[in-house]
Amino acid sequence: MVDCLNEEGKVPEVRERLQVVVSGDANNDRCRHRVGQYVVDISSFEQLVLPLMDPFKSSTKALNKRVCVIDEIGKMELFSQPFTSAVGKVLDNPSVVVLGTLPVSKGRLLPFVEEIRHRQDVKLFNVGAFLLI
Image (cartoon, rainbow, N blue to C red; front, top):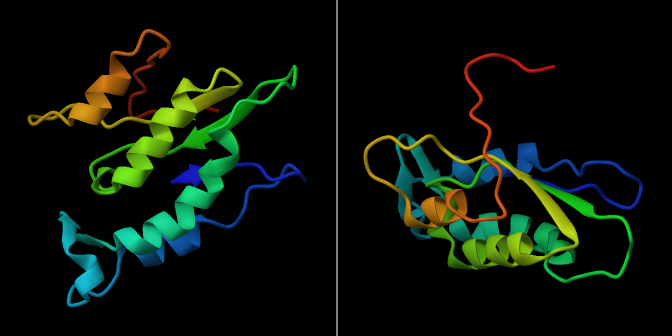
């Protein structure tokens, strides 16, 4: 999930549309990738998410940093090479602060996630099953 504030400071209604993307028809050729019970329509995911990330990929001369929230960078999202490329560009942009979530490592590691986890400019916080308010 990628949440980005628009100019009015509002979060676009992305969650409902993304749920449609990940619960697509398993017989659809665009939905070849699976994660557990979910089928991933990469084309629809990219059409939805990549334009939201575009404004965060290029540097700005503004004094204030911008914030991009990416929830999450996990197995499902990693089927998209353009998404991983966009995440890398956003993370490399000094004028953007990224608040993101990474999956807890369980068994098989995800190389791109581990790359992010070990970046010098990344600060990790382990959040348990508690609700933080």
